[in-house]
Length: 99
Image (cartoon, rainbow, N blue to C red; front, side, top):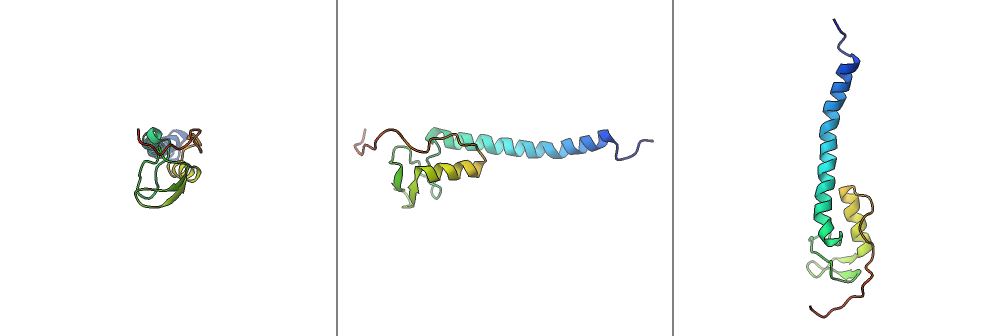
């Protein structure tokens, strides 16, 4: 009779515990990428207003929260556990005229 704490048993338990954790982190990472990518993570953290066409610093037109692009992008990337992948500034000047 094999002992209960054999190597195959321990490795099976570790795999059974690690799989849900890995799936959770993968799903969270994927959700974050799909939520942030269309707007380059330039989304208000309070009301989720898309700030993509606004200047790098200012107030959210929806809720009035002050923002900077650098702070918002860093907060979203930290929240979803992403590496730095979105721009911290825009290279185009702000043009207030509507398209």
